[in-house]
Length: 375
Image (cartoon, rainbow, N blue to C red):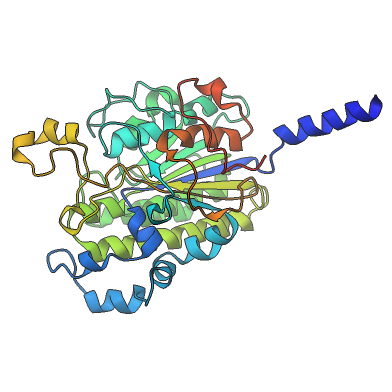
């Protein structure tokens, strides 16, 4: 009987055990799965309207196969995550990942990621305070996570998406300077430099500042939950600059590599942190539609169906990808086949990785991604 009880106890402990105490979530706004899994799109690259410096891009990111091209564009994803983590969403290998909200653009997508469910009432990118509670706010209200949750976003609307005033979560977003007690000299310098540069997009800053400030906060404040929301890829796409979009996508990979290296260099984070990476939406899956993303209802709302050639939505806008790396992540590598994954599963997956029961946060949220988390 004693042996049986010991075995049962061991099984119970294993079922609830986790290796990592910390989590970092990174989103890369509107970065298509096509580039992640196949490298640059030759049709778009050849399109004079969208691409400058074509020869330089081919020299930097070209190759004889999709495998070579993608490894040049995203060396960290394909040399680190693919070999030791989880990478889903390559529809060429029947690995499908989709959003569930009916709008296929940013605010609805980020709400879905952070709350675990789509909210049809969120139907614009206007900076209206989010009525929904994100899992970040829920964590911040836990004694063990109070003042240990932080958000850094390139897009200023994240202050509303997180509902900074209500949630109490530390948020630095858009063009605002960062400020926290004991702010480092390097962070102060980044604030000053950000204020001296031209503004390229309304309420959106370059990702270098978002990551630079997030890194300083990580080093000096050591949050248990950090969310970094990169944004350049989407803005360059809307500007119809494929060369800039590719360069920004590559810089995002460089940021991921530096982030992971930084985490492994700090006691308390080393081998004690999981990383999730995903996107808020896809984009058009043909060259002419590549710069854009929206559902049929969104196009009707903003343009009227009779005025738009894509009456049912921009094909590909609802297609996403998901990656993860860390001690509690199954080393599947690139996933082939399997069940369709959904954006509304990210919140539950994050909470499960942090050792919480996701249904304690929300019974309406999508379930955790079962084949991502080690048991």
